[in-house]
Length: 193
Image (cartoon, rainbow, N blue to C red):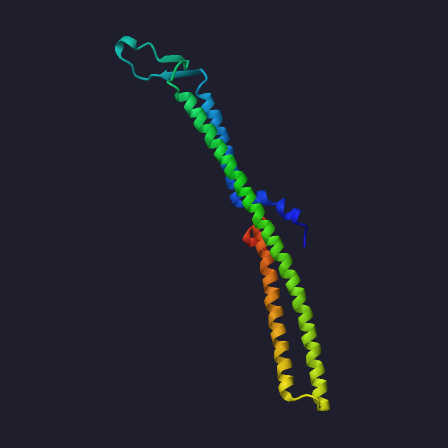
């Protein structure tokens, strides 16, 4: 099992974190665009004419240069910048929230995997004890010390221990897959073995 930090380092590859990061970046650029509306604007335009009225027949081109100075817009420009800033802050807070949620999911999945592995180890020891018990019961049966009912009970405990081990193994595998997915792995890249 890799250290928790290796899984936490992969959080940026999660789709939800990537989308929140893109939203925050886009909102940050919107602030710059809104602030740019407050600056003077210089524009150039040119037209070429193929067919003109008789009086202007010789003039084939015209060009224009326009300078716009936003002197007073009734607070509209300032309000758009403030709105863009608020939207940017909201997107940044959303990004932090998504990162915290992703980190929490990874930590929970890591803890669940550790617990599932410990449970698997307990089940392995339980199976070993059940096998030993069944062997001892069989030996005692050959000596005539136990009844066949006690042998069946021991066999039942052995079967239950095998089933519990299989379930614990499956739970550990699923917990590992859950951790990989929580850390940002694509489902098709996760090894199910």
